Amino acid sequence: MSFCLEIYLQESEDYKILASRSGFKDCAKLIEKEAVKVIHVNPGEKILGARIIGLPPVPIGINEETKMVMIPYTKPCYGTAVIEIPVDDEELARIKSVAID
Amino acid sequence: MKKALVLLGCPEAPSQTPMAVYTACKLSENGYEVTVAGTPSAMKLIEVSDPEEFYIKNKIDIESCLENLEENAFDFLLGFVHKDAAVSYFVTFNHILKTESLALVFEKDAELLGKFEKAVQDNTDAKIISARAYHNPTPLKVKFDRVIKKMEG
Image 1 (spheres, chains in turn brown, red):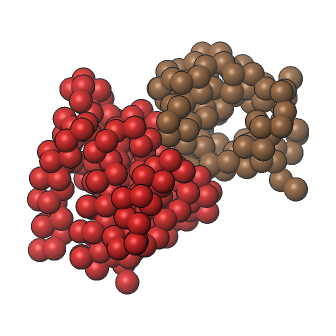
Image 2 (cartoon, chains in turn yellow, blue):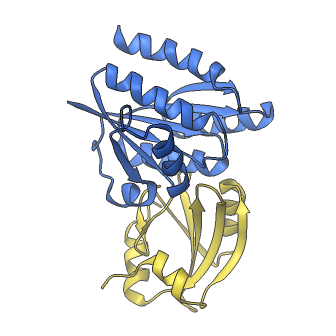
């Protein structure tokens, strides 16, 4: 079964929230500043089983050593958060394959 | 039949629900089959406002709608934009659908209104209706009426 971000966030504690209830632009800046490597994707791209919501180009932070990704996560009433979660090699490769850089 | 998607934002702005019913009505009169997408609480407000589904016949949860959305699945996108998150949602839906779009941008704070309007303008080719509005839907309604009249013509 493919990875589902919504279920993962509900069932796991293995993730970090780096910002919450923020604006998209501030979250994008945070990812650009903090991530080891940054790739960019189009809004609507499916990352970790969920559509990425935001303004193009949407930054995704990647740390290949720790196998962590940093993504913006938006909900209509709660604004945008930045979450960092672990991913496997397959998912990491899939994320890199949809980069527009 | 042409299909229109009305995208709702967070339902805390009082103007949104009456304008959602109004725009759905006007789009239906213009020959569109209208679907309204929103959060569970936004949909609850719609259900209570239009209990017989007289104006809004098709409702869908915003997350399931987004997950299954495909290019040109709708001929027209109308989005309510009154929060930063709503800008992101509208831009994302617009990018996936690649269809004619209209953003109803509203806020009581002029600075935020300008910021949301600019973000939509910079990231989409959507038509924009922008008004300082929160409780009173009239400024939005008047501007929407002008746009829908042009669509009729």
